[in-house]
Length: 465
Image (tube, rainbow, N blue to C red):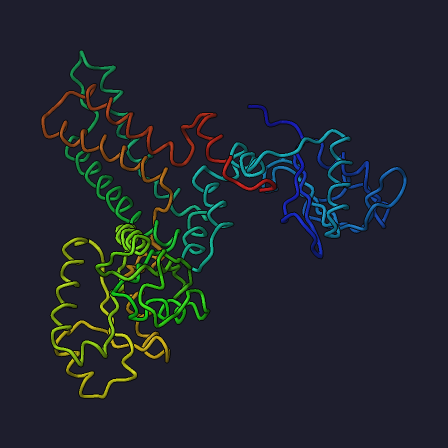
């Protein structure tokens, strides 16, 4: 992998816009731009200070192609650590391509996906976990995922991993030193201090691993399945939550025959709501397939909203038993899922009926999806299920599955070290597991890496970043 040439790419989305930004990075970035740029002040870009902006024209075949602003960033004080030029031109697709083609003819190469950020990593401007956070930041769609990505891009996670690795590395070096003096029976490592350190690192790794459960849903959104019998208002509730007529609403039971999904942000957290087919015994083949899909969606969700018609229950005592039985059946089938029980259509109930309903099913939430009353309470209940304490306290949260896998492997090796210390194993045997733990921690920040790993990571970036 050779990264000493000069690359170019469109950094803003393709298509028509007010302006477009074309990014160039490499040894010849400023020189190539100078050949095709005529400043209104007649100054050469190579003679200008870093972090300066210059008004002028891009020249093609001695004709002005476009009036542009050129930003100059000289190495090492740039995003990539190389000389970088960013050309802000008018957003015409024709102008964008003409400028890019002009620079390609002058010796630039089209950048690969994520190559600017890859060069930033290779030049020590970012570590690998920070580079991955750049992609997460671009993809963030709500406040929570944005905040987590910003925290990682600022290096909070990296600093924590590097600190743990350095502490472990210091002791590992002393153990390695003991091996050189094995014949003289010299001990450089205090076993009690080493045991305490390994215990501390194991506890930190366990916390980071546990945080992935929160981080993953903050990054990807919390899936919520809306379930219940047909015609209880599941689609109406989805529409009320989305404030849009997303699902078809009808008095005919069994209207929803397939799962309908959409996402909204509540309190900065993304929730992905799934309106499912009503659960009931049916001979309709298509409806049966929809009900089967309902159970599949429940298994994929983190929170279940069980909805029932408050009017039917309040006017029919046998319905109460049926609803309670159905709720228990769902809870037993999915014991690890958080569950909200909601009585819909309460706008038609009297106060005494509402009170009676709360007595029969104490945890029930009263709501009218049609009148959009009680929806705010539902949204607050959903937020209560999400542990955002770590996010609010700016604690490190793991969101990347590659980091999660490396942490699990590092934890496994350190638990072997713990067992080895307790069993009074020799230093050379402990050293093997310590080296492996250091390897996995180093993979997270990129201190230990390979071309295949880098290729897999940066292939998922957009071109121009």
